[in-house]
Length: 198
Image (cartoon, rainbow, N blue to C red; front, side, top):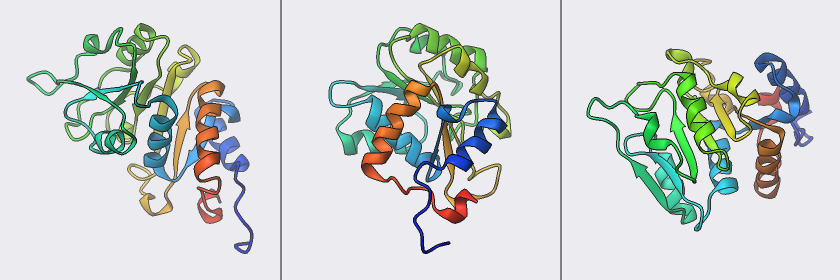
């Protein structure tokens, strides 16, 4: 079957992921690792007039992608003990990305604190990068039902030990996923190969 293009909608994979996460298929987008999904999210929800807020010590690609796409950054300092103060993210009025647990500090916020950040920024997307969530944090996936502006990104690269497969998921409201799908379809509609989908 490798003579054929993979299913660009990743429908069987999205159905399986939706069942696993307790969501509907239209709340799931498959990507070539979580990096691609995060890039698509910044492309969809930020631009030169819509900044990204992020911690000053975090995953390095956020800043790289902002520079690439000319997205202004609102960099928020960590506390002296390297924790992230959720109150600093309340009412920012911009797209927010938080790695939870943070990389490279390994420190995590409780899911309730992320929910409060989403509630305090109702008109802006709050992206939670859960690449390391299985190593000691509470997933925010259940909060998707309460906060339509919350986008959770997970990967198969870390705890699932499948970095070579290049598979990640973006999870959120159907509206957020539809926005991401428009970006994906315009850039890379065959982004998850057949073997990885299987």
